Amino acid sequence: MKKRFSTMLFVDVRRLLVSRLTYIMLAIALVCPILILVMTTMMDGAVTVNPQTGVETEIKAFDSVWQAIASPSSAGMTMDLTGMCNINLMYFAAAVWVCLFVSEDFRSGYAKNLFTVRAKKTDYVASKTVVFIVLGGLLILCWIIGALLGGAVAGLSFDTMGANYFNIVMCIISKMAVMAVFVPIALAISVAAKQRAWLSICCALGGGMLLFMMIPMLTPLDAGAMNVVLCLAGGAMFSFGLGAVSNLILKKTSLV
Image (cartoon, rainbow, N blue to C red):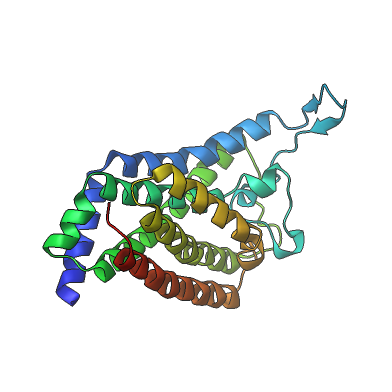
């Protein structure tokens, strides 16, 4: 069983390394924060007017580079630009990546051939879960690098808003651990939708939105060890629980 899983893991990693989508997703994670920070800084203070209602809206830029990663727990969840256009977007990017990759397996006939010849459905689900949690962590790291570069280009402050660097490290680890929640959700939906990528993406994004409001509370900029423990525990429960659901779906449904 261990050998089958390691073989499946190797195959998935190799396929992703030669996939153009892998480098596109990582590039998006790197470039997006640069564009967001630079553009919002340039537009800071600009006022837009709704032609129908006449309501004026002032565009407010980020006060600190670290806001593109997380806000302090005291800030809560804000529905403004800085509260929405931050690193939490990467959870949806990871979900889309999972949906596209899995749907291609079923569209091309790769999954049917794989299960017929050698692989167990459990190994397939476990491999996809592990690989995409790691890749989700890479998306997080790419966003952080992009945010630091974008902040330097835009001339933004690097003020940590009351947090220290231990808190920031705990925050980043917590962000990565939350990937273990979103990846299993997208995977379970993808194996149910099979080759219908559009359906799996819509459902995965919808499911992710239900949890989106909880992310700032679990992973604030001033996170501590308890935040990491909670995120790891939640990720483990979702990974094993939804992994079992994905395996059951594959066993009970047609592969085409």
